[in-house]
Length: 207
Image (cartoon, rainbow, N blue to C red):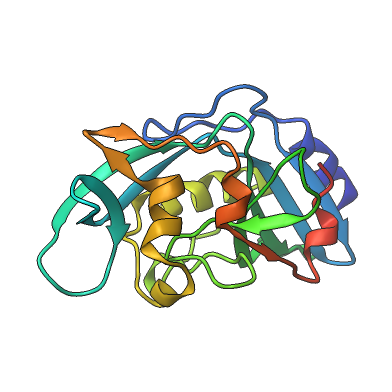
C-alpha cells in the first residue's frame, strides 16, 4: 500500500474539462492505518442550483421550493481563501479503494482553523452531501488521485440539495456565493460569514 500511496502522491491531478484548477494543482496524500486522505486545492466550483434574488438584485444559490431561476454558474474562491476538497477512503491490499466521505472546507492566514462554506449541500462538520446516487464509482484500477478527481467531478455535476438549507442565512450565502449583474460578490473577511468546523479526520489534512 505504501508504494501505491507514494506513486499517487507524485502524480499530477487529471483535470476534467468542466473543472478549472489553477496554481499548484498537485495532490497530497496522508494515511492512518487503512484510512487514506487525498486532498487538493479547488479554485473554481460549478454551482448547479436554483437561484433566488434578494436585496433587489443579488442572486444566491438555493434549493428549496418556489419560483426560482434554474441555472449553472461558475464560482471562483476568493484570493485569500484556501479551499480544499479532502477525500477519505479505505485502502486494503488486493481490493479497490473504498470511498468513505469527502469534505469541502476552507482556511485562511488570518485565523486558525477550518471553516464551512455557507452552502446547503455541506454538512455542519464540512462533509459534502453528494446524494446516494452520486457516490463516485471506484474501480480496482483507480488510484487515490483518480478517486479525488472523480469526486470533484461529482461535486461539480450534482444539483445542490436542501438538507442543510437552514444552516446559514441568505446574507451569509450572498456574501460569498452571491452574484450581482452576473458578477461574483467579493468579500475580504469571508471567514466571518462561515462556521468553524472540526472532524476527527481533519488532522490528516496537513497544509
